[in-house]
Image (cartoon, rainbow, N blue to C red; front, top):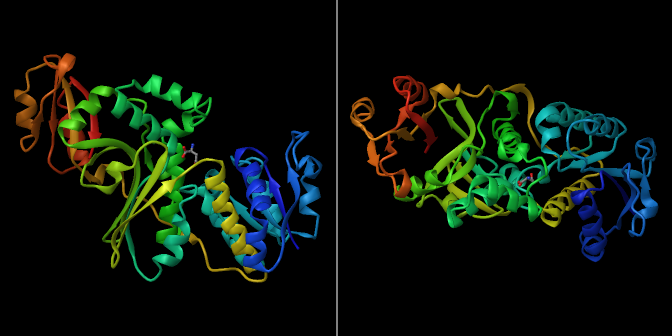
Length: 402
Ligand code: HSE
């Protein structure tokens, strides 16, 4: 029997317990062995649950138990997750985590410890929930260069933007509805400010460049400033607005960013709605593919954890080549990146704006905005050139990249 411990019995942790119990027969068939959860670390008690007797508040009960060979970390955050995960790896236990904050901040070190100890540190569930994007990049698209990953990587913000687009709901009302439905946290900052997407694109970029991309060096903007007028302009351009994490490799440079972007209707990401995630991958041989599915939630995320548990169980005595190695990939400065821009201006006198952004097309406003403002959709410009041109105006309401 393979004994597993779960650290953190929140939504994902309890989901992992559930899928292991529920799928016992499948696991037995696949592995020829039984997998059982033997300990759950949490400071809370869970009276009346089937796992009530497994719960402990004492980490050493897991760290020092030689029979536990795989530890699942679903605590979230880095403190104390980092300390606990490192201790488990050093104790020779395989670790499977869903924790993107931990992987983005400490992945390089934890992957190396796993290699040194001939065990595995796996984190499929940290990006894209139930979508096997990490495994796909590592094995499905092995042997080629991944030139671009552009993903809708956060279900919460995608739900909010979809509501704003389809129902004309304000950002605040859409967020409140997301919170009511359990899609958004009471403190939604990590999602709506783009921090969650930032960690996820940092992990994916590190995987394809085989070296660490420091998430703190990624230009990150959230969706809090997006309003319904932006969607009206987007419609006129046959586009939608999505929060995307993007990594584009060209001539040895990597441009990485997180920001709301206009997505034209011929882009497969255009149709990724509600809480779903979509991840567009461009390989030098593959061309373009999009992975689509449930990027968050209890059972989809627990399913990804389960797949990693099976991977560890099948490779108990060896480190499967995975992850990235030491070294840094420094993202290209945002100011050097190339985009088209939708620029909204206050007022109605567009002569100067049309002269400065000479190759831009005019996008006329609707309803209340008509007469109050106008907008231009520029050609492709370098960010710093757009900023320099925009600095000539004191009536710019907003700039959205495409
Ligand atoms: N809040 C995150 C999301 C959870 O909506 O995608 C999964 O990381």
